[in-house]
Length: 163
Image (cartoon, rainbow, N blue to C red; front, side, top):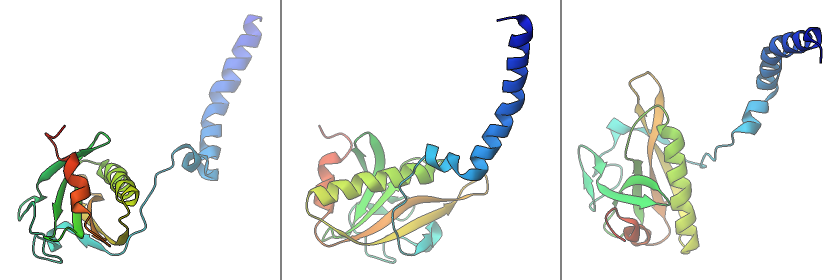
C-alpha cells in the first residue's frame, strides 16, 4: 500500500468512526450491545420510607440503620438479607452503594430469583427500594420480595462465612 492510500484510509476511518458510533447509538445498536435483565416489579419505595417494621415486619437480620444485616454470597454476588419470622418476606440489598448499584442489585435479584425457582419457591410481589445517590441519581439498592413459601432458608446456606 502506498503512503497516499494509507493516509486516505486513515482519514476516512477517523472521520467516519464518530459518525458510525452516533448512527449506531441513535438507531439502538447500543441497547443490543448491553442487555440488562430488569425484574418486573411493583411499586418503588424510597429507602427512608421503610424500616424493620414497615411495610413488613422483618424480624430476622434487620436493624433500623442498615436494614438487612445478614451477609450472603450467591454466585460471587455479595449482598445483605433480612426476613420476616416465617421467611416468606425477604429483603435483599446490595452491600455497597455506588453509581452502578442498580445493575448489581438487579444481578443479585436475578440470582436470588433463580435460586428460589430452582427450589420451587415463587415470587408473588416485588417492591423496589430506591435511594438517592450522592451524584444526583436515584438508584435501586434492594428489593422486598413476597414469596409463596419459606424462601429465607434457601438463602441461609449462602451466608457469608459458610462453606
